Length: 417
Image (tube, rainbow, N blue to C red):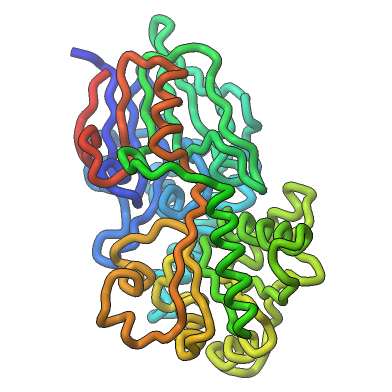
C-alpha cells in the first residue's frame, strides 16, 4: 500500500474552502486553507484533519484569494508550531484579504467576542509566515518543494514536490498560462512529473476564452452606456480582477476605444490597488480612474449615492454582489435607472446575490438596469488545462477545485499515489 496520500478537506468537488492534505515522502503538508461562501459551513473539514494528524510539518499557501486563504488563521491556531510558506507578494496581500473576510462574516454582529478572537488569531498567524521568492526550494524533511509562478493573480504560486526515489508531484493551485494586463502567465517545470494535481474550474466547459473578443464586447457595452448617459457598475473581486479591469479601462481610453469617463474604485479594491501599485511599480490611478472619496459623518448608503452622482462608473467589491458589501449597496442604488448597466466579469457561487440576479426572475424584477456578463478569466480554460497535462506528461492527473467534472476528486476522498 502506498504511503503517499492526498485528502481534499475542501475545494475538491467545489470552488471554495480549498485545503489539500498531503502525506508525501514521509512529510505531512497542507496546501491552502480557504473559506466557502456559506454561513452554515464556511471552513474546510478541520475536524477530519485533526483526527487524521495531530501534527503538520508545513503549510503552503498558493495565493491570497479568500477561497484559498480565508481560514488560514483558524488552521494556524490548531497547529501553532507549524511554519507557513508563501511568496512575498502573497504575504503582503494576505492580511488585508483575511481581515476583510472576517469583517464581512460579522457584518451583522460587529465587535462580538468571536470577531475579536479571529483578529487575534490573524495577528498570531501572520507572525508564523515565512516568505519565499519564486523558484526558491523549501526542504520539509525529505521533501523538496519548489515554488513556481502560477499566473492568475499577483504572487500566485504552484508547487513542485520532489520526494522518494526521484518522484515528483505538481500542484497547480489556481493557474493561468495566458498573460494578463497585471501578471505574466504561469511557468511550468521543464521536466515531466509523476503526479499532477490540477485545478479544474473551467474543465469540460467547451467555450474557449477569446480575450480580444471579450475586450471588444466590454468596450462596446461601456460605449453604449456612456452614450445614453447611463452609469456603469462593475462588481469585481478586490484582488486581481479589480486591477485587471482598471488596466483595461485605462488602456481603452488611451487607445480611443472608449470615450473618457470618470471611474471611482471603492471597497477593498481601493486598498488592494494601492498595494499593486507599490509591488508592481505600476500606476493604476490616473486622471480618469480615482480611489473613491471618503464621506465622513454620513451613513454609508448616502455616501454611495453621492459617489454615484459624481462618477460615471463605480468599480467595487464584491464581484458576486454578496449582501452587505459595497457593490451590493451600489446595485440597489443604480438598479433603479434603466439607463445604467451592471457588468459581471467572473465566477459566481449560487449563494451570491449576483447569481440570483442573473438566474432568478423574482429578484430581477426589482431592478431596471441592464445586466451584462463579459468574461475575463484568470483561470486556464479547458484547452489550457489539457495543454498543461500534455506538457507535464504525468502518470496520473488528479482534478480538484471544480464542479460537475466527470473526473472530479471529492472532498474527504483518499487519493493514493
